[in-house]
Image 1: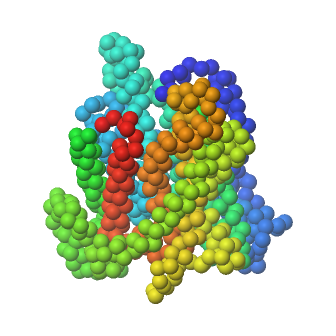
Image 2: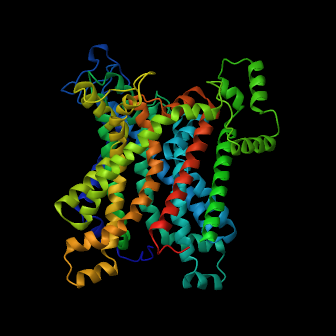
Image 3: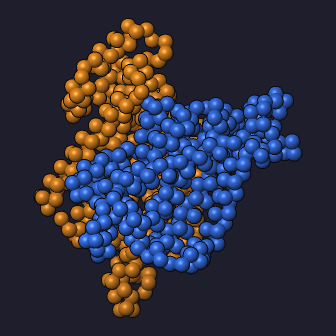
Length: 285
Length: 313
């Protein structure tokens, strides 16, 4: 339980970066995200421009990371695809937190809602993530918004469980009782007294969900059931490159590494955040 | 004890009922007419009407829901639109590769990750500990399709150590079929070993911080004996937990792995069902997998009771 949000800021940063790996991971991730979001400015070539002569050119001077089967510049495509992949990850992290906080607060605060909401969360968690996400995407259609929605529905129960458990504890604390005695309305108590004190575990979990969502999105795109194939994402790039695995394995290695490095750095940052925000949990890593 | 079992059992029934409800609702939430959606843009209005009748979509939604749940409880998950066969039969025909893939990869992961996890906790902070934690995190960050494609390209296509893909053809014997599962199981096992390693290590660290371990150390017992005599005995519980936890990961991983190695299992079936808009098959897979998940977790909870006398009931 993270109740001590009173620690001064410098101490927090100091403990966050106590491990060098967390700092490196953050720098790497910010670098990848920065390059991706600045894609239109940074990309050397038009990501959709085809050139028959450049087909399957290996990485080199003309094409930094090579050219794909249509002769399109892999580096430029990687940057534009990264924008989509990262947006989906971030969108899922935010939206699943919103859903999860709403469900968790309601379940933790109102005894009557607890049992039905908790069982609903149990039932949602019984569906494996990719399976539920691909069913939802199949039915609603493969657009970026639908992929974000589907994955947010998949991951919201994880946030909901954490929020509910913390709410159950905080609800009974003296300062909540005091607030109630002073006549503070329930929604105000929920948002100012409870939510404010469980921001840390939510933030940690949201960082991990960012990572899982990027992996899941790549999986969906690889299966051909994610965002429509016209939109490049790192997953669709691997899927497209698959046909040429024998001649040009760099076509799957490059987007594959982009996914792996982003996910790895997010997980390292998540671990660092957890240790810095909640020292009691630190021994688990 | 009987009361705990009863409560646990009732809870399970409620969750399975909710799983059925969610699976029903998901398909009904589809924008537009599900029948028209399943048939695609080329269908004539007459086809659509016929399918609506066949699926019972012309009846009130509540009647459809009751019929759906009643059918599912009796083991009737509807008919596949593509195969024109009962969904249960379609699923049963594809279950073998998925079940063995899941079992082999779990076995692989347990054999690799449990001893390393225990040893890493025992030698906390050592180079081996650091290396194992880093590799576990790396394994959890690389998408399994990437590992699968790389292994397939180098270990199967180039070196010929493993079959490249497929399940050995229609006449393949049991051994031949299993041979085709070795490389996919290693790929899926690597992903799962990451979770198992971290979990085993964390649980072992917990155990090593317990009072009885401190007492044993205080008595002057060597660290080696402490681990072997006291800690290992209690490591069974976390291992049971992790098997329950990895189930979902195994299924999600199996969907992707089967696709990479072109195995005719449930994962491949469900992806094809999505591409063919075969909703009853999607629905059926969701229900069967979720019900299995619930059962696996019930089984692990019951195993707890048998292994750990301290679990209060």
